[in-house]
Length: 253
Image 1 (cartoon, helix red, strand yellow):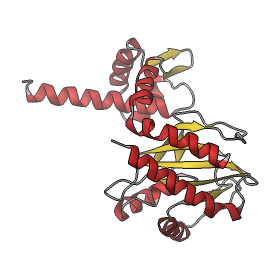
Image 2 (image 1 turned 135 degrees about the vertical axis):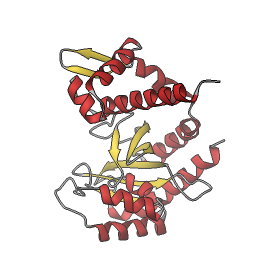
Image 3 (image 1 turned 90 degrees about the vertical axis):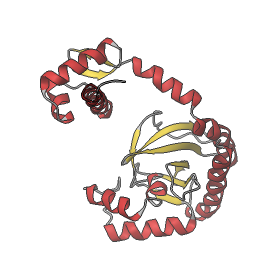
């Protein structure tokens, strides 16, 4: 059995390595050593040692611009995408949903204060833009609202306290009270609706995948242009999304 001091040191090293990977992963460009250290809250020598190990293992890469995610991360991503029970349960449901609605169907999973795109199936009217698998997106806009609506009250308050900007793509801002009222409506209807929140001219409907404890960490969505998702179609799509979310839940082991 390892000595307690050595075990604690190993755990701190692991946590620091993950902190550094998360800093690099969240950046859309290469970062200098000093930037990685500052954002991870670590001394530069410690950061440099950890980056050296991660680079040797292919988890980060370095060029003249600095450090960026390495090709070694693709192996872990591939293993996740091919073995994850949620994804295996969702794929046929997404295909059916895209076929039935003609819209692009996507699956999201909540990670902290963000959500990530896990899978997507294009419908008859493909989107004019494509979100890459693995893209981080906000929880307070679009399909994220279907997940935010299922947060416990204390967690929701914490989330809203750290939310410094609640502005739509068209520049409109949303007050805390209005957002809380909208979340109440989402809980009542069982689905969320967004129009022009992240991308001008786009609309979506989403529903959280139910779990036994009443919370939710995954959501399914259909999206298209505002013309593809007129207001008088939202209720119909909401019912489709609720059925799809329940179907995914029932397929989970």
